[in-house]
Amino acid sequence: MPFEFDPMTPDGSVSATATDMANFMLAHLNDGRGILSPATTARMHQPSFTADPRLGGWANGFEYRRMNGHEVLMHDGSWEAFLSVLMLVPDCGLGLFVSANGTGGVDALTDVLPAFTDTFAPGNQTTPSGGRGTKPQAGFYKPARHNESTVEKLLTLLGPGRLSVAADGTVKFRGKEWKPQGDNLYVSSDGRDHLVSFTGTDGKRYVATDGPTFQLESASETPTVNLVVLLAFAVPALSALLLPLVALVRRLRKRQRSMSPWWRAARWLAAGAGVLGVAFLVALVAVLLVGSGDFLFGPPLRFRLLLLVPVIVLAAAVASVTCTVAGWRGSGAGVLARVHQVGLLGGLAALAWFLWQWNLIGWQF
Image (cartoon, one colour):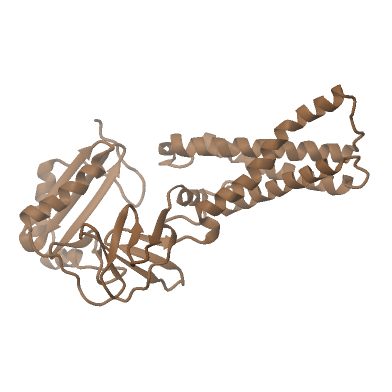
C-alpha cells in the first residue's frame, strides 16, 4: 500500500526499511553505537514517569514494562490500515520490530510480543515493592488522555470502559479479569498486566495499568445518564410529528380550536426545534461512526455546517418559551395541548444540557 505521511503534531511519520530499524535497535542495545553517547542512551532508557512503582510507565521516548522479570522498552504507533511496534530487552541484547498492514494488526501483535519474550527472554514475572493504591471503584472509566474543552470531548461518550468488582474482590475491566494480590494490586488472569486504582492530586479517581491509565467518569458523563437525557428529549420531540395529523383530524371533524397567534407560534416553534434536534442527533451519529477518518486533519466543512443546527434549535426553543409565556393565558388550548407543550420544552431543555455538556454549542474546535 502507498505510504501516507502523518503531518499531525507532535508526532509524525518515519519511512524506514527493516534494515534501518535493525540498526536503530542495535544502536540502543550497544550504548548508542556512535550515534548517541552512552550517557544519552542511558538517559533515554531511564524510567521518567509511572502512576505506581509496581506498574510500567514511560522512559524518554519509550514505554517501559516488566516482562518475565526483564525491563522492556517499547514504542508503537499506527496510521490508516497499518500498525508498527518496536521492543527492546536491553539486559538480553534483544530487539524486535514488527509492522502489520491491516486493521487486524493489533490482535496479531497481542500474541506476538509475549510469545517473543517467552521464547527468547524467559524468566519469572516479578513485581517491585512500594506503591499505595486504593480499592477500585465501580463505574465507567474514560482514557486519562482526553479532551475537555472542544467537541472532541464527545469521543469519551462513545467508548468508556465499565469496571465492576465482584464479591471476592475480582475486578472486571477492559475484557479481562483482575485478581487481587494484596496492597491493592491486581493482576490480569493471564499474569501479564497489572492494575492499580488511586486518587490523583486533583481529587479524581483513576485506574492505571501497565499500559494506559483511565479516569472515573462523573455521573453526568456516563452513557446511562446521557441515554436517559436523550430519551427525555427524543420522546416528546418525536411526538411533535403527530401535530399535523392531529390538526388534520380536528379539521375533518370540525373541532378546531381558536388559538391565539402567540400560542400557535409557540407550538410550531417547539415542534420544529424538536424535530430538527432529532435530525441533528441522527446526523451526528452518522458522521462519527462513518466518517471519523475525515477529522484527522481538522473538522471537515460538512461537520462545521452541521454544528449550525444546534444554534438554530436553541434559538427556536428560546423563541418558543417566549411565545408560550406570552400566550399561556387566553391561548384557547386544552389541558393536553398545554401538557404536551411543557413536555416539548422540557425535552428541549434536556437537549440543551446535552449540547452544553459535550461542547456542541457553537464551533468549539
